[in-house]
Image 1 (cartoon, rainbow, N blue to C red):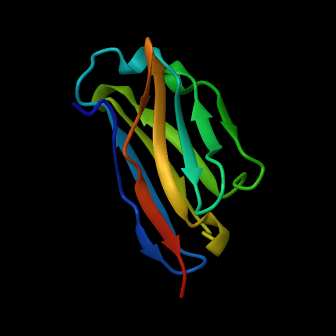
Image 2: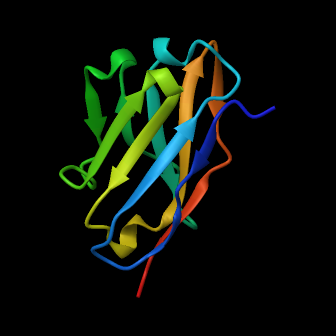
Image 3: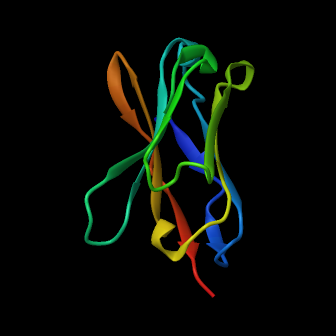
Length: 116
């Protein structure tokens, strides 16, 4: 039973945009916990991209995406988003949603490929 489900990945040219979504279909506790997006490129460790506190009052970003990515959440829909603008080839990775809500929950990931 999936606790977090990502969507929105795909192939985009450099300079393009994508919006990723992460929905939590099996809980009513989503709004009480922080949510994070991670990514993992081939041959590299999984790294934190962005995180957002409960209520969305504070956000944090990796230096490599500051000014280009925006994390947000809609607790009425139990959903978090990652708006990615001005994408670069080095953003190519599988993007994962993460939430620690009693246990550690990861989605299965969504592939983002930035290429001509």
